[in-house]
Structures are given as C-alpha cells and as structure tokens.
Image: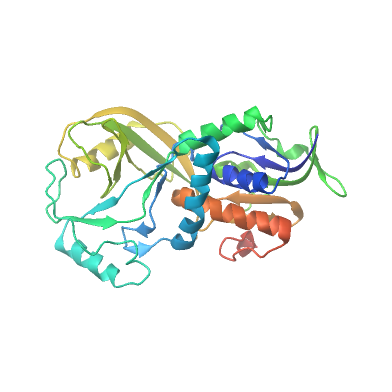
Amino acid sequence: MKVDYIIVGLGLAGLAFAEELVAAKKTFMVFEDVSQTSSLVAGGVYNPVILKRFTLAWNAKEQLEIAMPFYQKLEEKFNTKFDEKFATKKVFKSIEEQNNWFEALDKPELNTYLDAKIDHQKRDAILGDFGYGNVKETGWINTKKLINTYRDYLESESIIRFEKFEHELIKFRKDNLEYKDISVGKIVFCEGFGMTKNLFFNYLPLNEVKGELIIIHTPELKINFQLKSSLFVFPLGNDLYKVGATFNWDDKTSNITEEAKNELIEKLKKVISVPYKILDQTAGIRPTVRDRRPLVGVQPAYPNLAILNGLGTRGVMIAPTVAKQLFNHLENNTDLDPEINIKRFE
C-alpha cells in the first residue's frame, strides 16, 4: 500500500489534520489504539476569555475564525450536531470581581466578548449575590460524539487501523518511509501524552496533567448557559450537566478517583444550592507544554516525521488552526508561527 501520510492518533489534533488531507485529496492511513483519552473526555467548551484573569486567550479571535467554520463543515459532512452554542455566565463572588470585569471591558480585544451589562437576575438554584458577567461567542463541541463519528467514517473508508503504532519499525528510504506494509511520504504524530514514548520526539517538554469530570442530574437547576465559577457547569440536555474539571500533575493514569470526585463535590457546594445525583465520572490526561503553546513541526534529523501535539485545555479552539499551519508547512513550505514551532526547544 502507498499513501501520502500516516497519522498516528485520532484525537482532535489527528482529526483536524485528517480533514486538511481530505480537502487536499491526499491519501492517508490513521493508526489509533484508543490509549489516549484526553479528547474523548475533554470538557469541549470554547471560550475566548480566560475568566480567572479576565484576559483574552492566546490568539483566540484568529482561532475562532477558523474553528467555527471547521466544525460547521463537519456538521454538514455528517449531518450531525456537534456544536452546541450557549452563553457563559461568570458568577461574581464580590464587588471586586465586578470591578475587574469593568476594567477588562476597557480593553479593545475583550469588549467584543464581554457584555457591559451585569446580569442581576436572581436564580435561587445558584449561590451568588453579586450578579453574573455574560461572555459571548462561547459553546461546547461534543468531542466524544465527533471523534466517534469520525472514526466510523474512516473505518467505512478503510483508512484507519485500530492498533498500536510501533515507532521502531519505521524504515527510512531514499525518497520515502516504510512502515510494515505501507510506503508513505510523511508521518504526523498526534499522540497526546503518548508522545513520551515516541523515540523521535520524546525530547520535547510535554507535561501530563490529569483531569476528571462528573455528569450530574439535577432537575431543579434549569439553566441553558455555562456557569463559570471555581469550576464549570454546563447543560447537556434532559437536566444533565457536565461539571469540571480537576488538575492533577502527579497521577498519570486515566482511572477515575474518589479524591477528584470529592474535590468537585466540595466546589459544587459553593456554586449551586439544589440537590443532584452523580451519574458518571470520566478521566483523561491533557498534554500540555510549559509555555502553554502547542508542539508543532518536523523532527530536525528526520524531516519526513512531524508532530502535532500539546493542545492543552483549549484544544477545540486550537486544533483546526495548528493543523492547517502544519499542513501548509509540510506541503507548501510556509513558515510555522515561531510560538508553536518545536524549534524553540532546540
């Protein structure tokens, strides 16, 4: 078999790069062993504003301009809803937080996304006496549904193999690469924290941060927006809500823990006042980088090997942009943004 590309890993990064290949009519094969779950258990929320500091997320405007049409195109392609748009309401815990909100409104890059009018509507189910700040252009990508749909599509086209990729079996030929029965032009690694076992890229400083979420059922909450406080609570429909997330820098497993559940319960006590039942709990490892920028580029000694990784907590916003950048770099020799280029670690 001969293909233009092999993609290793089908999270958001691999999916976004695959779509670039489909659009360019490039042939490819995906290898996915379902060992990395960060995209499948991700919150999936897109929000251009970092509400903890009232600052604009890195390149948020440019990323949204690419990401929103990207997900709309996928909805049309599969005739399936992946993007649920809703407002985000920041719970103010003090007058000081209100003042910080108004200070942020004075920043030109933020006033597009922050509503100048404070929401003072009383909501008995939510704990808070200082109102809410409305963030615009936010929503949720159902990443689990999207990735499972895309896997089914690739399987129907016979362009995915559900098996572990063995890096040591790559053979370097004069004009191409060989991997098992495949002759391939380039290999793009989108392995998440699995990169730590990749002998070609494990020198890069990838951090592994475990996150856990819970799904709760609470008929009395009745909100159609994302609630943002010390955690997020957003609606899934049918009185179900996703709540998260935890950050654990020590535990490198994808196992759910009582510790994380109890942490979320304690935080939730300070946010809502209505009873709820926990229906599910999920865990995954987020691949993050110390400078909070993705890892994108080619292996210095092996230019036919590339990486697309380290998307962090805002993967749904970042993935379409960095995938497009990497594709244009590999195919058209365009320069990568120095902030994401792995050359910064050479």
